[in-house]
Amino acid sequence: MYSQILILSMRCKEKQKALRGFQEPFFQSCLVSFEYKNGLRGLKGEDYEKKKVEIHLKAAQRLLKVCLLHGGVYTKFGQHIASMNHVLPSQFTETLSVLQDKNPSVDIKEIEKTIESELGGPISNFFSEFDETAIAAASLAQVHRAVTKEGNEVAVKLQYPGLENDVLRDIWTMRLLARAMGYIFPEYEYTWLFPEFEDSIKLELDFIQEGLNSERVARMFEMEDKVHVPGIHWDYTTKYILTMDFIRGIKITDRKAIEFCKMDPKKVAETVTKAFGEMIYFHGFLHCDPHPGNLMVREMPKERQKLSRFFRRCKEHQVVLLDHGMYRRLDPAFRLCYCNLWKAFLTRDHRLGVEQAKKLGLQESGYDFLSLILTWRPSTTSAPIDSRISEFERQKLKDMYKGLINSELINSFLESLPRDMLFVMRTGDLVRGINKDLGGTTSKRLICFGEAAIKGINLKNPGEHAHPSYAKLKEERTALLQLTQPYADINQLVSSEMGFRVSTIGSILDLAKMRSYIWIAESIIKIKWWLSGNRGFTTRDIG
Image (tube, rainbow, N blue to C red; front, side, top):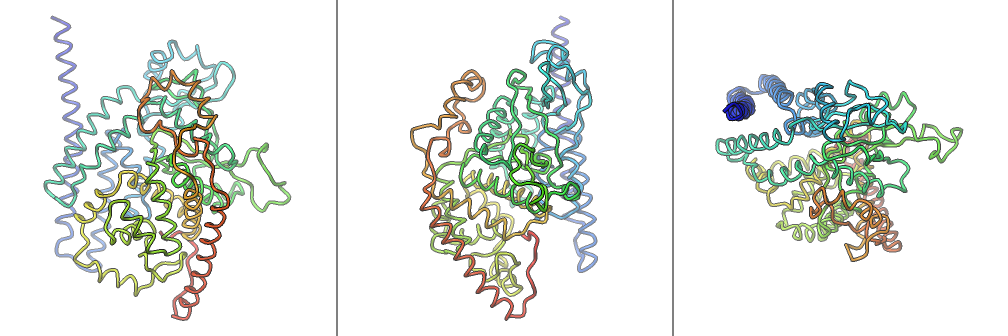
């Protein structure tokens, strides 16, 4: 009888928790909708702009409140909003930036219970040192510094207790809110996004899967000294605990700290852009969550430094990639198509661009839309790569799409894209934001992506033979693979792991062609630009 009462009591508490989890987000969503719908009504000019800033700030503060209150999925959403500094108002990005590396952490007693249940004993059995205060608290887990019995300094990532149930509830709540919002405002119907989001979150909750992702991407960059991935300590890793090498570094967007340490922020931006270009266009195995809290930079370890300090203006740097839970294996056909699409953008090959857009299931006009979304300029622009489009082109675009572009059309267009495209676009947005914060240029970013695309075009798509290093890992980790999702798409091999190599001659010819075309086209365009009386070019990333 007592046990039945206890079970009923627990179920009642769960229902109350679920109800609270719905009430606050729903209430705040209604307030934000009301403020935007009615707060700007009848205002014009300076009054309109002033009120809009005020409403933006209120909306951002309401969203931050919900994220801090519920954590988990909501925090991940808030982190993404904070990283979109090239699109969203500063009131949102600045208010929500605290979510990138500062979140509420759970008590050490809960951590001790997790370690005991997962590793089979108290903390002292496995670690000679274990810092009680978390050094980082993310959306799904918190991280503690520790030292193993073998003397290795490690970072121990522990999933929040009961998180799996909370995530399922939060996804249900967000889906319900999205449906309600879509019913009230049909142009904001985004429920089609949830299946992919839900699958991604489920994989992210499995730390063994994250460890495998980490090792795969580490092998992909094993020949690149400027990119580092912390090693995994499998003896101290389970589905809910991930133990990796402890790395000291600077937050990737802390430009002042990078300069203080005599490293070049623009060179760091270039390394980040090249690394993610390689993942997208060449490997097709993509880290989908590179917000500033998941990347660090440090001075290049002495054993890897190539130049004597007497020949360097700045210290050599090394970018550290963290948090490998949210990954995407791009469809091979999509990867190749996307490479050709970027080649078309940079060489202004309209025929090739339209051809690739059709392969993605779009109409001919879809290529222009993609050009605007991905490069912030129309495919027929006469502006140089490192400059904004002219006022004439801007007005022409406004006139062309006036009355045609609305939220419903944008939503419909995004829904028609391959799902891989959405993950690539999100990652591209995050990389663009980091590049902007570090003082990187649009021209350098686009050309880095273009060079990676040329390399990817000359890499054959999957065949039968696996790369020896992956075959060895698979043999060593069979048991671990069985514990995760052995048939999940994420664990399938990509071309670069199958022993395929880039066609060197083809790649050199294509790269030379692209470089020469860009140089000639840019030179002509810049001369025309100056003769037309336009001002100089910007040196920062403008999108």
